[in-house]
Image (cartoon, rainbow, N blue to C red; front, side, top):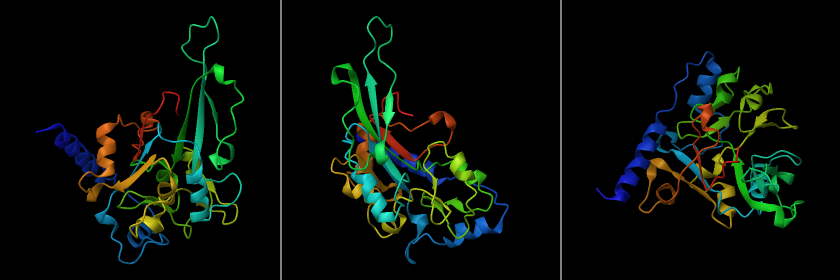
Length: 269
């Protein structure tokens, strides 16, 4: 069996593992109703979430920090103005070690002005003192074991069979428990609706066969999005998995994210 087949088999096995989502015993009828009926998901009536398994991959080495993804997300999803983002870009600047230091690098400087929208200003650190600099797109990590769901007292946040982690605003009471529980800082309280909000992978788009807005506009093709249950020949997901050392954010937490990264520096958190 050749290398390509082995790698493809590995990816398919990963997809099968992801299909076995953690089964949670729901104490409230509201949660069961949300999962069964998909209230307010904006998916078309004919969409069958059991026939898909969505996956987002990000190649950090390709991200140029233009911020078009964050801007497109704001417009596509009606995200409120101000410091509210469903997806954002972080810049990591790694300084050179100080003269005489035993360290190989300085402490990372991380910023994300306006969520990275409209790009980044020149770093305040002189270029001759910078060892390395790069950009990292962030969003909901689509955890297979999401702590946000565990703490929601009314079942407003749930995992769909296709892997999307969603919030039903009709059930959300704005308690913000899920916002506090998310280790990736991916949720916020909408100041207008007083309900929790986050990335939905542009559910209204992907359930109609379109790509998320952030993927659609990325000029560097740093974001790769696809369906593990419907892999095509030479699928971008398969190529990403074959060619890269795949990582996830904060693996020690056991959340098992389904947003996969390549090209991450050890400083990324």
